[in-house]
Each structure stands twice: as C-alpha cells, then as structure tokens.
Length: 102
Image 1 (cartoon, rainbow, N blue to C red):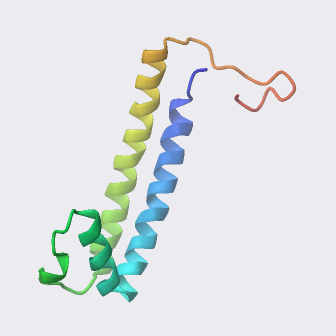
Image 2 (spheres, rainbow, N blue to C red):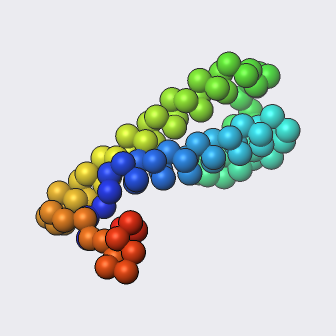
Image 3 (cartoon, helix red, strand yellow):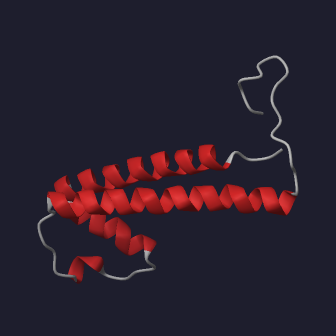
C-alpha cells in the first residue's frame, strides 16, 4: 500500500503542533513539574538547575511555527521514503468507498 505523502505530512504536523501547544501550556502553568519530566526523559540531566526565564508569546509562537513546519517535512519525507522502500506505485482505494484510501 502506498502512503499519501501530503496526508502523512499533515497528520504529523497536526499531532506535533498539538503536542507543542500542550507543552507550552504545561511550561506556563507548571514549570517545575515540566522540568522534572524533562530531566527524567534526558537520562537524569538536571534541568531544574538551569536558569529559567518567563515564557514569551513571540518565542512560543515562533517555536510552534518552526516545530510544525519541521514535523510536516518529517512526515512528508517519511512517507516518500516509505513508498520508495516498499516500491509500490499505486495508491489503493476501497472499492466500496473510492474517496477513502486504504
């Protein structure tokens, strides 16, 4: 089955953008717990010891835009290379619902 590159890119960007927004809200309201979780995900690096600054709207917005664009590219190229490695030339559709890819 061939993977639709644009659909994969869009889905990856939407999921990544939503995760980014959740993280921004988490940092804004619960910075201490966020730093603790990041320390556990980074094999014990103590993020709590780093100096912190107030979250700025412009910085958060720029991060959201660049992260979402980056993930769109990741999703697109993931699907592109998936299709190349599987060497399938046709996008299969469901005979009962030709508007839905299977």
